[in-house]
Structures are given as C-alpha cells and as structure tokens.
Length: 132
Ligand SMILES: [Zn+2]
Image 1 (tube, rainbow, N blue to C red):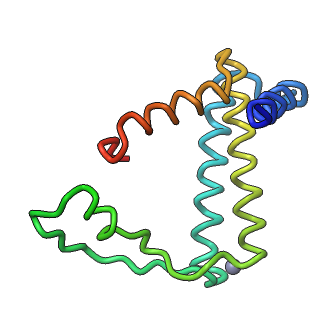
Image 2 (cartoon, protein in one colour; image 1 turned 90 degrees about the vertical axis):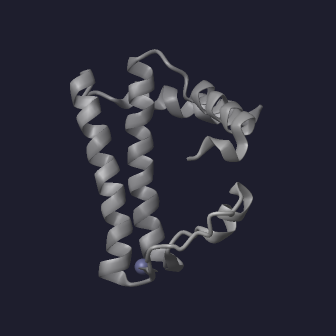
C-alpha cells in the first residue's frame, strides 16, 4: 500500500537527517516543544489573526441522551476557517511535531505506520465506546 511506504520513507528520512537531539531526553523535550508551538499557532489564529474564533459554553446534555446523540450535541466550539497564512503556519508546526514523533519511533524501534494501524483497529473495534 502506498501510504505505508510514505510513512516508512518519512521515518527513514528523519533518521537520516537528525543529527542533533538524538538523546531520548532531547527528543522528549523537542516533541513537547513542537506540540506547544503547534498549539500556539492555533491560538494565534484566534487571537492574532482572527480567522477562527472559539465560542464555548457549558453544554446542557439531557440525561437520556444516547452516545450517538452526544455526537450531535457536542461540537468543536470553533467558528470560521483557517486563512491561507494560518493554515501554512499550523501545517508547518504539525510537520515539525510529526518529525519528532518519527524520531521517537526511530529511537524506540517502532514503526509509525504500525502504530497508526494499531490505533485504527482499536478505534474501529471500540467505535463510539472509545470515548476519545
Ligand atoms: Zn488566519
């Protein structure tokens, strides 16, 4: 399948070009840092650019609501869409985050595609009961 090749190539490329931060301690720190930068980029889309807005309040959920009904009641609290500039920045930060995830996989001898497939199987098996 083409997608597993893309994951494997990405993971291999990361292993080839990662010179600094090869220690597990550095990788854990960089992974967390890139995750924070990704979250900041999303927040800046709200507070700096304004192309997306957050509109959140406590939801009143009737006690007899089914799991399927919950899906319709709960929402993202997001309004609007990322503009081209914010989309580019968020994608850049997500890419950096994926880079360090791949580096962690390499260091721990894990295959990113296998991790993805295992998670996909778990999601399909649990369905709405996953509670993610
Ligand atoms: Zn924007």
